[in-house]
Amino acid sequence: MNELADIIITKLEVKQAQWDEEFHSSVNDLYGKETTKEAFIMTEEEALIGELARLQTLLMIFENKEEYEKAAILLSKLNAIKTKLRKGDYDGDDD
Image (tube, rainbow, N blue to C red):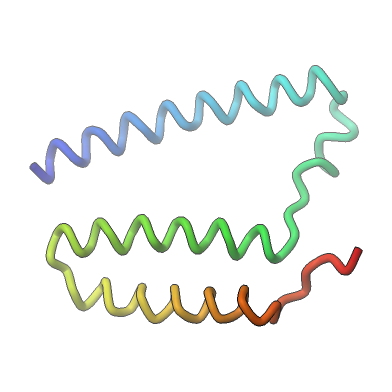
């Protein structure tokens, strides 16, 4: 099962890279190469939300593999990020 999961993840990573490239290409076509750099600047809040999603995915993987020590470490990091987001304790945009 783990070998199958590794194969699936590898194929998904390749496909995601293709989708990312297509997306960036379409944005370049729409806005031109000069504005795309500005279009992809993330706020700290957006970066924290992305990290939260990544850690939650890893947590599920570790729990499924019964790697509970790794899962516990991730859970601690997840809770810290959730607390930051709830409190607004980041340098987000103040627009």
